[in-house]
Amino acid sequence: MSSFPAQADRVRDAELPVRRRLLALRECALRFPPYGFRATWHHLVVNAGLPVRLEEDPDSLLRAVQELEEARQLWLAEAQTFKARRRQEKGAGRREPRPNEGWHTWAGWLAFCPDPEVHPRERLATVVHRLIVAYRSEAAPSAVCPACGALRPSPPCPSCGAYPSSPAGVRASEGPDTGFRWQQIWHRAVRREATVGGGHITDFRTEFTPTSEDRLFGILQVYVRGVPLGDGTTTALHPHFLNLRGLCAAAELPGSRGPEPLSLGDTFDHLEMSLETSERDVIFTFVTRPERGDPPPWAPRAGATMRLMVRRSDVVNAWREAEPQFRQFLSWL
Image (tube, rainbow, N blue to C red; front, top):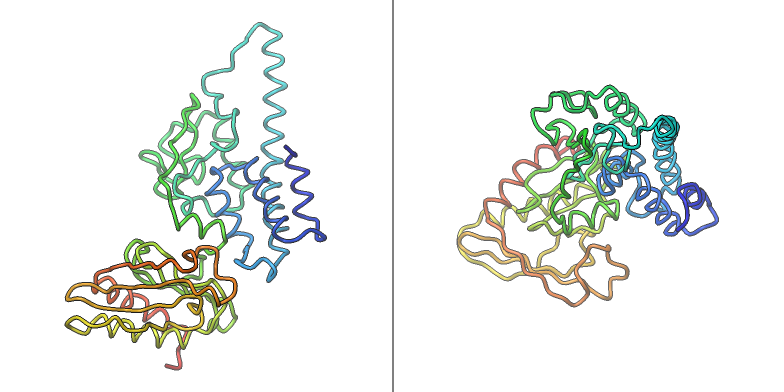
């Protein structure tokens, strides 16, 4: 098993394929995950701007490993100080560490975040420094979160999501299996600060993340019962705006209809989709097209049909919430 420095060198090696460099970054995050691996990975993806297709911005890998290294250096310095002090204490006959020093044992529980999308947003080094100072002063049990400084009636912190290690080293339990949600985080298809949209992922949600200066181009995603349908590529917002408006109109029509072919634009070309409606529900049926090249990694297996049902009201409400936000980008409409 190679070390953090060796893996960091691989991340920086421009001669290696970007996929290999990405896996090296994963190894670095596994070796030093102050928020737990999943939340730390999400943090790096967002802060460094790691795109779905790494070829578009390979330097994002360098930004990510640099941020991780900065925080790790602080942690290593603290660990060395702790080891030196423990050697002195053992020489003086104190064989066991103090009860409140359990936080030194594993960096992955410095400020564990059960929800991978909810974690401190500041640079890792800033938060790690704040945590070290708080734990040294034994401030962790207080009502103030040592990760972000907000009031924390009970863990996890309602502001930043962190669940700091207790003085006795008690660790929070792992969060529930996130399924498609984690697949997207791993593949860098995440919501970012500029993302707008409406609805809930677990029912129906549509969202757009602008990537161009004029905000007319970006990444559009649609979720049906937690399943992401878009391919994560950059696309024009306007045609998708019209397609989604038509989908909402279909959901508002009374009575049962379909199934009929459904087209939502080029972001969804890897799927063959149909739509039908009952008195209460909208039913999406889709299958990955094997002839459409390389589908997104979260797409259903080619040839396997998925049939997902959502309430009409979920589709309509999601669009009503998203439409005015999309219109702000399409001010000429």
